[in-house]
Each structure stands twice: as structure tokens, then as C-alpha cells.
Image 1 (cartoon, rainbow, N blue to C red):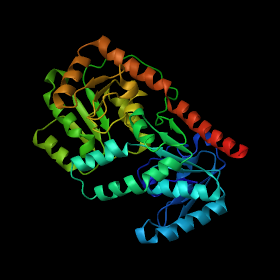
Image 2: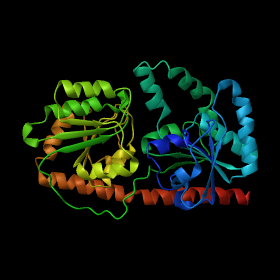
Image 3: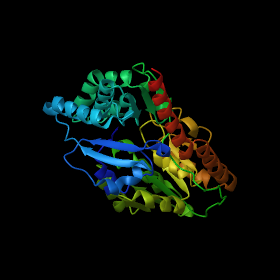
Image 4: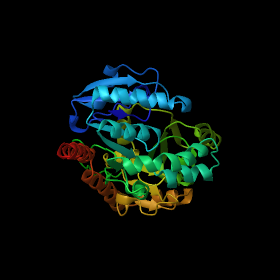
Amino acid sequence: MVFPGAPLSRFYAKGEIKPRYYNPESFFDEVHFAVFADEDVKPKKVRGLVGDADIFIHPVGPKKIFSLPRLLRKVEDLAREVRPDVLRAFDPVWAGYFCVRTASRIGAKSVVSLHGDYDRDLRHYAFKFGDYRALPNLLFTERAIEPYVLGNADAVVYVYKFIERYAKKFNPKRAELIYNRAYVGGRKFEPRFPKRVKGIFVGREIREKNQIALVKAFERLPDSLKAELLLIGNGSEFDAVHSYVEVNSLPVKMVKSVLHDGIAKHYEEANVFLSANLYGGIEIPTMEAMTHSLPVVKGYPPLDDDLDFLKGNALLVKNEPTGFASAVTRLFSSREKYLRYARSAFQTISGISGEKMEAKEARLYASLISQAKTL
């Protein structure tokens, strides 16, 4: 049974139907979703999310503080009826709480995955940027929810090394690194040295993603590079960044959204991926770009001076416009340098490909179920 991060209709609307995302290697015969909404998309529209399994979507109602006891009973009754082997949540707060509590009460295993560091990402930047709408809830869950979830889940999965410290903060029973899935498929490294710069970044337009640094970097590039930048993503900063681009007549194209199936075309048309993300770790689009042999220029996040597998395999720069402008200029001034980083990107991601991570996640489920049977 899965507690997704949002109603599945939201993923359907964005075209984010990633094959087997909730059922690695079609490990389970049935996948049930407990969705916190009054209604959701028809199962057949999102069937690809579960591979070969039968899919069941159970809208259990929205989360409201005064209805939580009733909702907890409803989810527990549903779980007793479905009798899942494993319950899975994709955050360590409310979905995680429902997951771990319900699993413990029906005698099933629970897995909670972490896709960010709630201390050094969410709480840090909520304080830094004065997000007083998010802060009260983040401070409440830090003390009342997260310790229970991460300390009692049968397995805590974290998707990049930056999260490891937070993942182990509450002494989990088991913590395992399983990177986000970026599939290599049948792609091979094909050396090519472009004559002009075509940069790309994919991510929400919010302050923490820091797209404005990339825009200002391209403003500084010499005309001889004939540089273009594509930004894909929408969010609270879209209008401000777009206004800066328009006022200064910059070679930057901004697209609010692209269906997931169509994103590959944009990677194929680009020749360098850039990220000024302030959050620690390595975002999925960076990894997806690497499967297309794009060299990566990545700014060091303020709280992450490691950057995991990108060290030595990407141009890591000071996270400011001049750092990016200098790195891009150097990258495209040398065929040898460009091809070295392009090849390194592809070889690195091939070692932790989506295929390998999917198999690793399936093995995690198998080991938990085997463990349960021996108790």
C-alpha cells in the first residue's frame, strides 16, 4: 500500500507517469494507493506507475487536523482489508506517520523514502527566506512526527548522500541509499563537440532553485559562444525571472511545463546542463541529462560541499553568475575538456542507472518480506 506525495491526478495532469515508479521490477502483484483526497484519477490512466500489477486507488479523504483520528481509523480498516505486505510513504511527515503507524498495527513492514533534508533544506531555507507559512508546520513535525516516523519505519530510503545525516538522525532500524532513477536504456556515449552553447535546466521556479543565477551567467557570456538557455519549470519566481529576461533581451527561453515523455527531446537538443540549486544533493533532471551525455556545470549549494558522484565528473563552481559564466566559457573553448566531461557524465550515471536502482529497490522489498516471514 502506497501513500503518494499527492493525488495521482496531479501526476497524470503533468504527464509524470513513470513506468513502475511505485512497483520496481513489477515486484508486487497488486498496488493499492491510499490517497488523501475525496476523489482521484481513474486507475487505468495511471496504470503505468505500477508495471504489471493490478492497481487500486482508494481516496480516503483530505487530511484535516480535526479529522485525523477518524482518518487514521479509516486507513487502518482499509489496510486490514487489503492486507499489504509492505506500506510505503514518500515523506517523513503525515504520509510517513500514516504509513508507519498503520503498518505497526496490522503487522506489515513500512518503508519511508526521503527526497530532501528537512533540516538543511526545508527548515533552513524557510528560516532564511522568511517563509512563515511553512515554518510552524515544519517546526511542529520536527518534534512531534519525524522522530516517530524515522525511528520506527522498518526501512528509511534516502535518494542521495546529502540526506544521509538527516536519514540517520533518529536511529532508524535500517537506512539505505537508493538513488533516484535515471534510465540509460539503450543509449551510448556519442562524442560530439558543439559549435554553440545550448544550456538547459529543469526544475520548479522557486528561490531555492536559483534560476536567476543561470540567467545572469548567460548575460555575461561572450557573443562568440552564441549561447542559448532553456529553463523548464513553473513556480513563484517565474514572473520575476521572465521579466528580467524580457527587460534585458536575453537569449533565454522559459517554458512552464513539459510532459515527462517529452523531456528527452529537450535534453537531446541541449549540450550542457546547468544547476544553481541551493538545495543539497543532486536533482533528478541532472541525472537524466547525464544519461544523454550532457556535461554538467553545477554550483556548490551553500550547505553541501561534497556533491556525491559529481565530484570529479562535473564542473563544480561557486554558485554565482560569474562562476557559471567562467565554467561555460572554459568548457566550450576546449574540445578535449568538453568531451571529457560529457563522457564522464555518461559513464558515471551508467554505474548508478535507473535500471540498477530499480533492482536495488526490489531487493529491499524482498528482504523485508523475507524478514517478516522468519519472525
